[in-house]
Amino acid sequence: MPVIGTLFDDAGEPIPRLLVNTGHGSQGTVSAPFAAEWIASELCGEFAPCTRAELDAFGTMRFRLRQARRGLRHGGRE
Image (cartoon, rainbow, N blue to C red; front, top):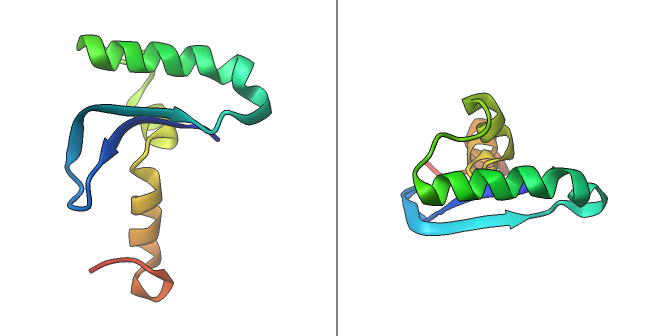
């Protein structure tokens, strides 16, 4: 599943105007136009082309949230 959206620093704060659009793989012809529209709407300050749940599913913070659910034993931070 691709990774799309704002990048965050170590403290979890968004890095202004630094976005990523990667990991599309063989389905890139389907997912890349959606990702481009999402990033364009983010840069222009418009509404996203999808719901909050969809944004979270593709977002860059999903890895940190998953690690936090797993806990310290699996490499999470306090």
